[in-house]
Length: 349
Image 1 (cartoon, helix red, strand yellow):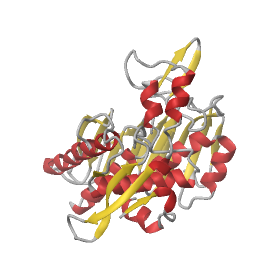
Image 2 (tube, rainbow, N blue to C red; image 1 turned 45 degrees about the vertical axis):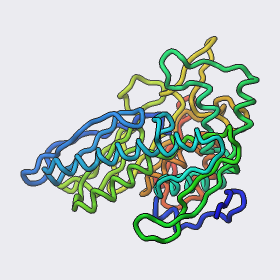
Image 3 (cartoon, rainbow, N blue to C red; image 1 turned 90 degrees about the vertical axis):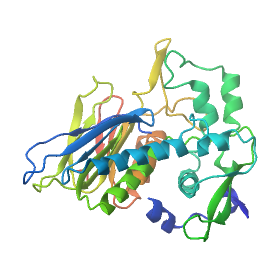
Image 4 (spheres, rainbow, N blue to C red; image 1 turned 90 degrees about the horizontal axis):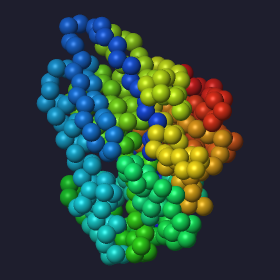
């Protein structure tokens, strides 16, 4: 059975609870002096086009870190739009044919399409034709495309083109989403606005299953804290100041057992004729979004939700973004405008 997204009812909250672009770096601030004799163990790697770091505070078992990085490699091999043979790459190069994918790829794509529906397409997982055209993140290749090229690419951006099909689960045998078809053969998927949040949540699930109760997962602009530090103190996370030198914090937040995600307009950008062009693209125009916001920081228990909301707010702008976030439960936010003004929710720490 195939079900196009525009024909299905809004996905239930169960999906979000079950599986529940980040351009600004969040900086976990390391503190020593953990309780007892256990020193934290940490490892750094490069995945998802960013530096990731996993730090465990209540175990010395390096094998657990191995498991985290095995997950990083697994999800890069599923979700990367540029890695040949990944699920997303296969979808994008199928020419409109149906592709069988992993349950997790289908699940994440369903969540991404649901957020596209919620935001009326402000964020859209089929943004790939546009993002690929602009070459953000490609050394020496980023440039302003011709308007005719932009409008052509924009005509293929619509989450309505995504159709899902069901097949038996490999684990349970129950019917789950397992196939994806793009009804527009020139459409293409990019999960960059939500994938790292999903991966952080999955790493948390894994670490909890290994009885890790104190850890910090940092995936570029996504930081997820498991519990608190062994001495009872919170984790401290620095939020990068927009347009400042890398590593300069605008603010520091203290968190326990929650996620902090920041999206902004300046980490992946370039100047052409003295005009700033950044990687957060407007699905209405095909050009970078133009509004007051420079950065959005979201705090909430679900990293995948924080990831999606930060990008959505950045696209919506200050007033619409605040209204949107104020309607969400368990969400705190810090919005920073291009002129440096800050707007915080009442519950922002």
